[in-house]
Image (cartoon, rainbow, N blue to C red; front, side):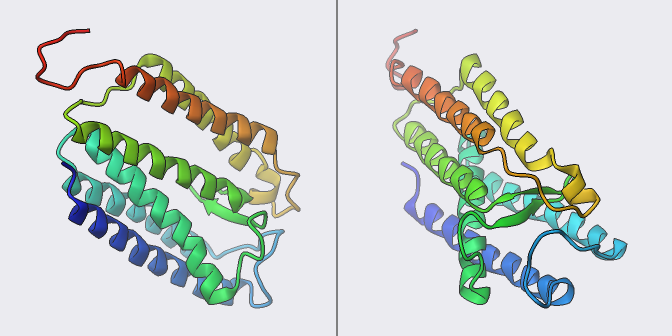
Length: 222
């Protein structure tokens, strides 16, 4: 069985780490957006951008390292990463709401990531992705806890990759807004929702197939 104590520590780490990330943003906004964060974006000093790039890279390293220590198999580690990332990302916005009373709405825009180019979009987008990550991670852990090793079929990989391409394109397509500091174009919700549906389809394909497989050690072969 998957340890509830491990799950508790994963969630606690993610909550605390989310506060650290949000507190850094509080200082950045005081520095560059003293009248409140809004688009179009403002020019940030090259040195600060470099620091931010390494901070984001370090964030991924920390979450991956946490998941690696928590899991025993490849998919357990992936699942713990998905859960940690999802909780961290959601509570990043929760803490900003507590500290700055921002965002006023889930449809407020934010800078989501910086690598390889800045990502922008409404807050609801990363929140919905994080919810799916948490659900998928929990289902994978539940599957492995029953003695059935999780496997993702090719169809699931294809849908997941397609969904990722769709969603990333909605975040990175408006380079005028991110690199030339123009007013953002309307967000492509239709393409984002298409990407989410691909993710849901990938999860359904993976877990419906898993339900047909017997637990490990039964002697049956599919």
